[in-house]
Image 1: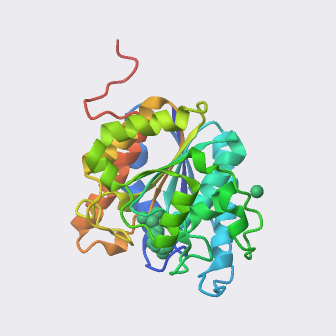
Image 2: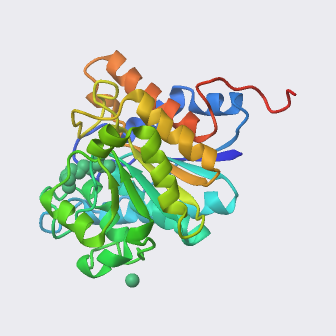
Length: 311
Ligand SMILES: N[C@@H](CCCCC(O)O)C(=O)O
Ligand SMILES: [Mn+2]
Ligand SMILES: [Mn+2]
Ligand SMILES: [Mn+2]
């Protein structure tokens, strides 16, 4: 296994300063070293350099051209990392980056499935958003079924929808806007909200998720992990915390389970905002959890691990 790391130090999909510090903070907590220690080859592609574009709004929509431009750059980088044969790791940055991440992944592998772990659905369209923040809208640019609902926007013409609603699964939802809820119901998207996690338990949720995404054939899986899926008591340093989240153990179980399928082809780890921890301990808890989630994506098991060259 090999990991290709892309840093996307981008924050203009939302308005709370600091989320652009996520990539370097996650690196400085030892992600690359620990991946190597567990037998994973690692190539760090560094942090993307984003062109300066005007950050003007279009109506309610904030920093439209900047978000479009950054995601175009990320899409190109993601495709290159996948063409190099790595499992891609995109370190955010805010969740608007899923546009470029999933678009670029699909450009390399074609059809894929998306497992979206998040307190939020991030499926507002530019016309249903009430905040204008693009981190609440990425899914609307990616789904074929919402293509006709997305207006033409500056620096977004390069985006071609690349995902079908039937190939999308949500885990952890607990703060969904009415318009998003309508869209999820209308499209029949598979959702394991926190209520389902409570009812079924995380093991059953993961069994059903994996059955669901492999029913129509085994496609590469794109895991888009918003750190705010985890309970804020564990990961407080994030922009849109919501009480009643996944435990640390449930969060790691999700990545352990997906890793064992052998289908994991790319993972986003977004919305870590080091400036939003009240204490350094808050920040460290958030970042350590992010690192542990990513290690789980690369076959780390809590039971223990040993080098494959042992007998
Ligand atoms: N649904 C809200 C909150 C979005 C939260 C984004 C996060 O999940 O990346 C909005 O549209 O602004
Ligand atoms: Mn999100
Ligand atoms: Mn979220
Ligand atoms: Mn189309």
